[in-house]
Image (cartoon, rainbow, N blue to C red):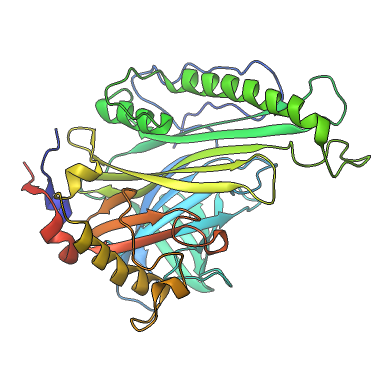
Length: 393
């Protein structure tokens, strides 16, 4: 039974404004989220496209989210894609910067399509009206803009700013912040409010939701306070100082939050809330928290809404088989030779597609940092006995 036709029981051309990177102490606030309908920030958009990959007969649907790229971005290149075929198995695409604002350069990053030693296929595309045209691994590719049944139009809101550690001090280190979120174009709705709650990381439902500009302003103010406190404390023991970088690099903090579409059709909207943070050390930390919403009600479908109780042993076995498919681990090889675990733990970090569920394991959870984030897809046919399902109304 396709999940687009059944849901879980217990489910109770752009006019744009944005903020650009500055080094001010008082963040400007745009009164956009209070309007009946939202618009994209300049240089930002979300679209869905369909077409055939070269050499295949399977039509793929691409969810493409584009946001402005800051010149000082270290981890994000401004675009993210997720695509799937008829089986509902999604694959993720990361991006590299391009000089042309209407162009995107994507590459496969899902473990099934790439590995730690090399990136996957390159997608070089240019937006031309309602089409994306270009190449896939050097072969011609043409995708047309679509809106699948049950999908929602979404807008991309984006803010970025910089905060100096020591105001008035020459060559002061700085923290760089960015925040990008996807919201329903209709404006304030139960779905939009629940997306904002998940963006904030709320653990309790029905908490009051502020408008997006106010949320950004508070987040920036809180970050500035804690960052400057860290800077004053760390100033006493800085290493790596030089004439060009008198405070070293350790206080050049980074905090990035982005929201991406992982699935959007058939009454299901699945989003990934990606965060990257650098606060000194050898490297930053990152991870994606996933959420699925019933777009008919706007409600978040949580783990207990999706799965029946007392199923962990069965699901662990399914995840064992699935991670072996994902990482190409032979059935005769113990998991601990590739991962940190002997048996697959059941994570609650999961989202739904029309063809199954994806369980996301962030770095260090089951594998090394170098192995990255590991998404594990389990087909609906395997999950069906463990799900709480009811016919769609």
